[in-house]
Image: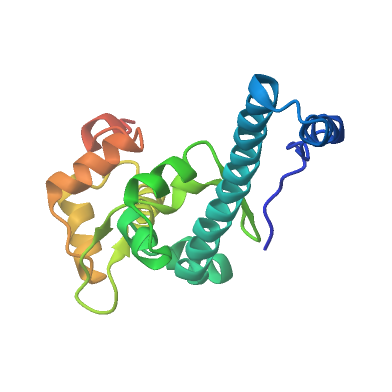
Length: 195
């Protein structure tokens, strides 16, 4: 794994400033000019160090995501596990707010494609067996059920909840309705085909 820093310039302090500082020191002309250059040099080095730290933090977060979502990366959406910022924050021993800033507007290229880092953070639904299931996986199942339904007798939210419950997913009808709305799937009455 690597961080793509192709768009970032390689920063360094100009040799001419180092030379100027050394000359002022040798000539004994320290004073204000030397102090000014020293302050600017310190600021420049701080900026370079901060950018390097930022890249290392992005790498740590990405490594943690890959480690925790290995099942998804190897097998697909059915193995996507619920994960919140706190999971990664605890793994890399940083604050949740730091992780939140790192994943904002960042992307990760995986064997499954290119994803916003935020894609991997979502809630989970309880299961009767095994680990909790990702809300994205549940939404995908709802979509599959709707696509396979009889257009003359579309599945109600209660019927969808029962189908999911049979698969060991503990989900309420109102949660199914919420997910269906988020997926922009019309209600069963609006999906019904009249011939």
